[in-house]
Image (cartoon, rainbow, N blue to C red; front, side, top):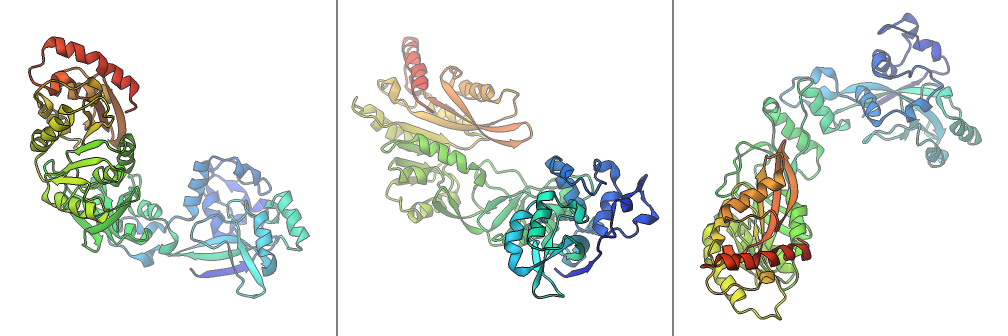
Length: 499
């Protein structure tokens, strides 16, 4: 960042801001560049032309402040339409007011000039004076400070006490690519008026973007800007198809950076390693992973039907639960085993590589027959079944129908299911309850709870429905009388237990 400066004294007064329509009169020709862009758009800024009324700015909405800031600190207009990143094209010179002070009083003075000082990330507010090594220059807000009259009374008083002249000088500050935020760069490059996506999901060193159609011509530039502006990100990828329902992964294109998809992430104090191109991982589910873990108590049993690389199974095992974890994807199965060892819970997790239905009707059924068939009243631990495959998990609920033989266990010991689903319905909670109830053949509206996990897309929600499997569904040869008998305790259980 190269800085040039020169003093302009007290010649800059209110008369220079005379405005006629949207043009600049001859008397305004000496106005510094930083102020010119503001004057050219009087209809966008309310009554800001009186230099001695700076207090008006402090009451303006934050959105107006951001708008004014973007006018001055936006990249050059000629980068519009750029598809191959040219960092040198982002050079721009702006005029900034500065105050010259003795270097030994800078720290004391800055505490009193917080409102007047320039507030711009990445730009130093105090710089060396190129003409006087014993002095420093304090950068001031160009939208608040125009002349010495722009300082508030308290600020002028401090300046007087410290024997600092309130004379304002101007700086020609050269901004470069490094001084602009990623959103500012993308907003300047993409067609005007179109949405700018600067957000992404971070998976270790990988930035996972989901670009819209109008952004695709700029995809490589967007990827490089994302890497440049986010320390630790060395690869940017874009999803190019929907998640495959079989293995829950998707095809991706490397937009910029390295092609290495082997990554390591930390979530809720646990470490996971995997090949992001071959398994499913969503950092936006961190809170949901934690929520389910908090429902579990030491000694509980957890069946994770679609376990992925272990974000439910491993925290549960660390909580001294007995865990059975399954995933059909061979890559997920491999990394699930790896992560169990990595987090030192491999002795507490039994891992399977089966279809979800086969897992439920095989290992889960066998374990439930033992857990529920030999129960005594002294047993207090619960059985939880997590089914995190939102696109299809509800369909797998049919595997619970007549799954077990023998006499039903007491209602309070029936397994608790946490099943995930998507909904585009106006009433998503009711919709998910009806989806699950239809598959099971019973109504769940009075005996289930629904948790909103996150908004996936406009008018599309991800939800988790939690319920105990009715004995009439879980056990074979149950009569209608048994079903009627079992329903009331089920309703009471929902009231007593915090799902």
